[in-house]
Amino acid sequence: GAGVSQSPSNKVTEKGKDVELRCDPISGHTALYWYRQSLGQGLEFLIYFQGNSAPDKSGLPSDRFSAERTGGSVSTLTIQRTQQEDSAVYLCASSNRDSTNYGYTFGSGTRLTVV
Amino acid sequence: RKEVEQDPGPFNVPEGATVAFNCTYSNSASQSFFWYRQDCRKEPKLLMSVYSSGNEDGRFTAQLNRASQYISLLIRDSKLSDSATYLCVVNMGGYSSASKIIFGSGTRLSIRP
Image 1: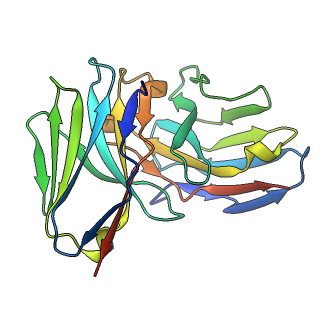
Image 2 (image 1 turned 30 degrees about the vertical axis):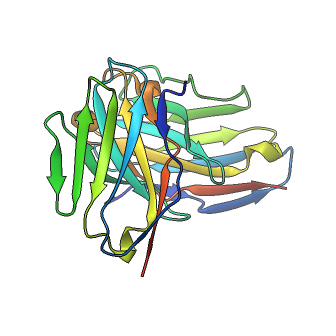
Image 3 (image 1 turned 60 degrees about the horizontal axis):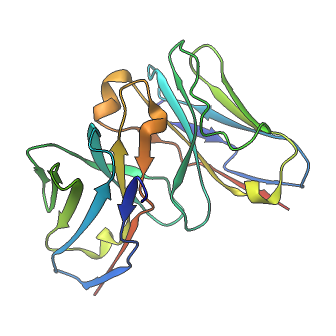
């Protein structure tokens, strides 16, 4: 597609439930990133995929968080047994390798609310 | 010390004014630098990359000072539409190290009529 697409745009879930967030990057972009942003805060790195390399998971806050990227394209971020502190906007961004020096394009995010 | 630090503001300036803010970074090996703009409840969007020699895009000028480890953003003839949060982004690692890409927490700018 023309841009990075994320779904759903909003998700309200009960504490303890699992959620899946989806990111469809720009076609041809080999790198995909997940960040989260709590209200009024900066962006927190979660995980990074680059081509077929092993993902950089160093930002995942706990083992309740996992992500995969199928076929080098669409990515799914899964949060198990959600907690209230997981409430945030989850942002996905993509870039091609040559764009590392030119920034990345963000999707419009998924606003997750855990009640 | 934070890896990337910005004055959170808010900067409240009248329309037409010139405003500048800095962003400091801790790692002298940092390789690339960007300014992003984020509007309220929207995703960040790339405003401009910051080149070693400095660069200008219309009313916006970005500069890099490696010796003092900071980047700056200057906005001339500010418009109401410039009101946003400006995020400093520093890539401290190589191409394969996204975890070294650090976002500042942003500087809020508010332009008043």
